[in-house]
Image 1 (cartoon, one colour):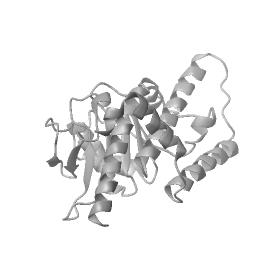
Image 2 (tube, rainbow, N blue to C red):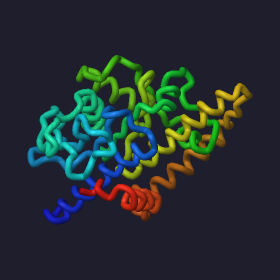
Image 3 (tube, rainbow, N blue to C red):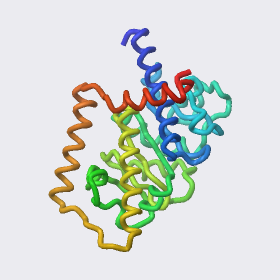
Image 4 (cartoon, rainbow, N blue to C red):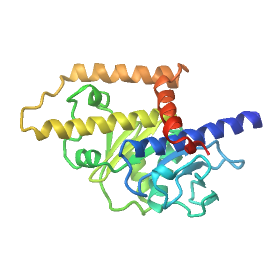
Length: 256
């Protein structure tokens, strides 16, 4: 890749990741200064895995393209414009995935009320509606081991995740992988809607209607084909462009 093209690609990645932080905050899915969204950079000159993470201590609505921190797979900070380092628990989870899943450009982790609620029940997410059918039989599970500070947990996270793009971290929250930042954000927003809808439906005290297996699987494949048409076939992502226009109108400083 030519230096100019590489620089443009990295600049676009930083912009998209900053947008992801702002969008997650805008949808009320952040958790103070905790949880993280990471993006994998092109490998370093020695082949080392490098990725971008938010500066520790900043709210999601304070993250910009220019203050993102670059770290490697060992936790060494390569570039830290803000000067506060990164959260150790964020490094544990995100480095585990980026080291094992090179298809994952972006890893997005949240602690929303609805996501934590669904992660805390044995059944997990049920195919109760079109949103949740997208994830039918496509969710991995990882049992809670405490705050993710033990690097040995990385192997278990990766083993439990397997080849899936979505994981429920039991009693903890959600984890989403995207082949692009845009895909990760869209998956995370749909997962959050699904969890909210399940909590709302089951709270009514009426009888939930669970989709038949065949219908849920058919719907999941329809969603997958739509995502593949963008990520594999290069179709324009009009939904992501709409999200960026919204941010450009209300918080254009995310690009700085």
